[in-house]
Amino acid sequence: MVKIDNAVKVVKIYDENHKVIGNKKIDDTLKTPESYRTIPLRKEYEEVLKDFKESEKKRLGKLFREDNYVFLNRNGEPYTPEILTNKMPVFTEKWGLPHITPYGLRHSFASLMAKLGVKETVLKVMMGHKDISTTHRYYIHLTDEDIMEEIMNVVSDKSTASTNDSTNEILMKKMDELMKMMKNNNLQNNYLTRIA
View 1 (tube, one colour):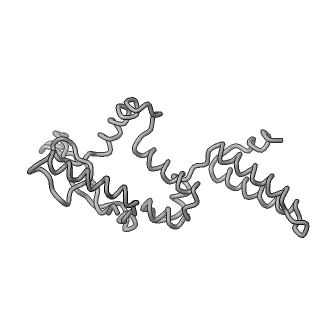
View 2: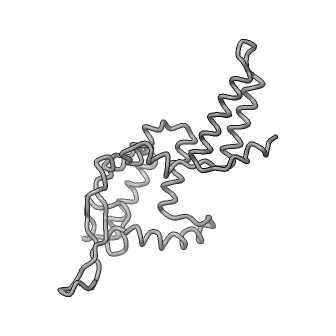
View 3: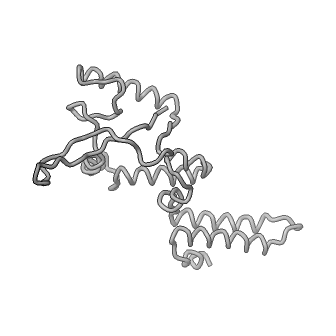
């Protein structure tokens, strides 16, 4: 498990004339009580992190602290969000990946977990959100393929509906659900015309 209980932040240092003369990294509190959380990991990922921690002990020597962040720079200091964002293009280019930011990875994680069927309430807790609407509004994104897949499921449901069910009612209900999903995700309604 990974425990999230603090955040590194960069604060500006000012001189007596209120001019910025530098920056300092500090450990700080998280935004909300919900931000403090424990993220479950599969056993094999925990083992990878334990092995990584051991290699960091050797690499950093006296600079290493048991209670420190997981990923540290060569000076034994935690990375700031800005540094990670600036380093991502080097990483993605090296591994032939599309452009993405650390924040984009967070969004992708939430969208993939939602697509795989993780309950919204569980996802809200994993993301550290106070309100489920934050998870919906900013983190769960539908792709064109998601929309088309759902539409194809509607068509499939229509062909397998029992004779006791009103096929048109089922179809209309599913189409209403799709329209709400599309509206909530600021998607254009023209997806429906593509399969007509």
